[in-house]
Structure formats: structure tokens, C-alpha cells
Length: 196
Image (cartoon, rainbow, N blue to C red; front, side, top):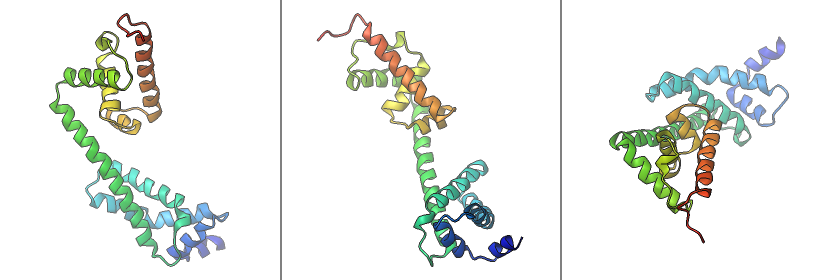
């Protein structure tokens, strides 16, 4: 019990200095720092008009980053300033991601569903994969066309595909890989394939 009391008396800066060296009690030190700042960090995100569920995720991300970057803490730097620099960086990354996603969403609303997918994916297959002469609509579903379009024409990351379509990032890696394999297999047996 005396150990807990003595830790409670540590300043935030002393906690960060001790965390740098990864002592055996780093978990309890980190929890103490978390208990002092988690609500302040969350309120910061809420004041930036972030949704409650996103604010929770961002808050967790701040403390994950704080723990990963604890060795970079410079002794004497005020703890609140250092923590909120990390929070601001996390917020800016979130904002960039959201802005890119919103732009994508609005551009998809303005496009007719069949034309953007077919032409974009066909162009990608011909230019990037050297798959010419395939009738993509005969063996790819509309959803598969849209996924390829989002991934390769718009250049969305797997994380962004997850955000747009739902599901886990690993699912999207497998799904895109399967569609890509389907294209390769179809091309292998295509009668229109150019012979070199």
C-alpha cells in the first residue's frame, strides 16, 4: 500500500521520466498517468466536434502512442504539453482520414454506379495488369468491381476499405487478393488473350 501512495505523489513529469527506462512497475505508472489524463484527452477531442465513439478510439490511440514514444520524452518538458502534442497529432491524422473518406463518399454519390466502376477497373486491368480483352462484367460482380475501383483507382488503403465497407482490415487484404487472383485465372483461360 505504501508503494501506491508514493506513486500517487509522483508528478506527471516524474512518471514520464521513470517510464522512459521501462521499470518493472511501468504498468502501474502508466495506469496512474492514464487515470490523470484520460478524461482531459477525451474532452479535448469532444471539444473538436468528434463523435463520442470516435473520441474514445482517439483517446486510446493517444495513450498507445504515448507508451510507444515514451523514450522520446525530454526530461523537464511539461507532461500536459507533451501529452497534448500527441493528442493533436492523433487528431490531425484522424481529420485527414475523415476528410479523404468524405471526399470519396461525395464523389461516389455523384457518379452513376455502373459507369465509374467498369471503366475505371477496365482501365486499371489493361494498364496496370496488362490484362486486355477481358469482359470483366462476365465474371466479376458489381461489388467486386467497386472494391477493385476503390482499392486501385481511388487508391484506398485496406484500412479505408474497412471504414467504407465494414469488416476487418485482414478481411479486405484477403478479399482483394481473391478478386485479383480471379482476374489472373480468368485471363489465363481467356480466348481474347494476346499471344506474345
